[in-house]
Length: 135
Image 1 (cartoon, rainbow, N blue to C red):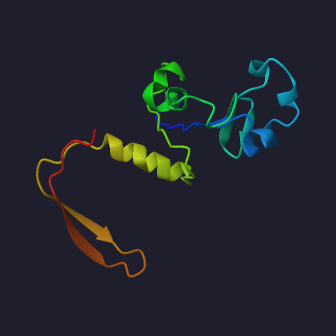
Image 2 (tube, one colour; image 1 turned 180 degrees about the horizontal axis):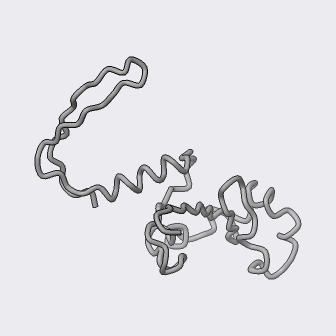
């Protein structure tokens, strides 16, 4: 599907968390974990339960998605965004906006842009200052 952007949300949670217990109430009693893990969803998020709790995992395991996303995702994945375990509410549109912002190229000179107020329909000119590449 050329031209379409797809955004997959994956949440890695502790198997002892309330979310994992809600998503996989019966499956957790089954073994092995790989038979059912990653099949449950919470809204648009695919939920992957990790053994133990947040404090039983070493820091390098908790940071795997941030430090080595290529170890977790297919080679066809172009971008990955890491969100810390702290509560963050980010809509798909907001996340895609962040990704687009990261792709913006450098601005070598001041650029004039006209914006329109949606309520008053008034046009205003703004000037965007030179900006280095955002990566």
